[in-house]
Amino acid sequence: MGGFRSDQARGPDGKWIKEKIGGTVVGAALVATMMATPIGAGVTASGGALSAESSIGQLARSTLDKAKQSAKKGQRRTTWKRLDLREVTRKSDRVADCAVHSYGRVQRLLATTPCRSLHRVLYALDGRDGDRVVVSVSWVRMRSTGAARALRNLVDVHGTGNIRPLPGSLVGSGRIDWTGWNYDSVRSGRQVTIAEVEPLRGNPSAEYMDAVAEAAAQFPRPR
Image (cartoon, rainbow, N blue to C red; front, side, top):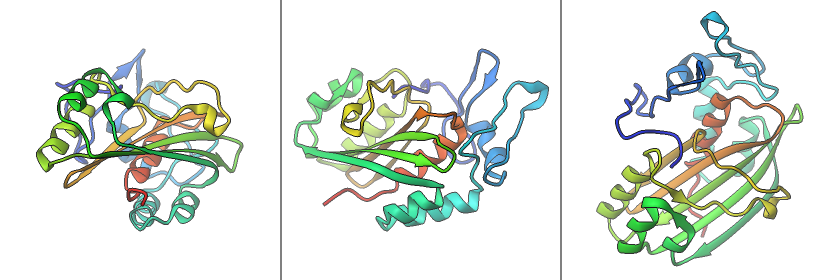
């Protein structure tokens, strides 16, 4: 994955705490504050280091929790609506060889510990103020709980690689640079779900995209 180091600390919610980049705080340490802000409001860090104003806006934690509940039930339309998004395009595939569709140390792990299946979905979503984000969700089914745990532990660390999202051309976009900053993962038994979010248009905040990834990681594997 592209956002964390193995020696980074986790916050109270278990998420990796991101660091300052060029003097700007972009990580989980601010999420609790940002999530307490109503949709459409902005928050500025002390000293003007970060303006979190976004045309999509910030989510209240209660709203995000409801979106996650909808996602767990597979209710996509309700989930996106609660996140103030509208699904424009959705593309998916299913393959048996995870290693071919991954990179870095994650690829090496999957080459020696093959998965059972890989489902990938790519969504293009519009916000009400003209923003557009792209969401990639990958469901990796491993052969054992131990292998799934090893995969998640590896993919959650910066610089170790990841599952390759579907190409942006499938949802009407050019090349998408997946940074790994707006990311979440979930493990349930032998399955690891990996969600990433990137902006395509407008200026959605990092905290907002983190929240979208957190909700998207709750979607059940397609049948």
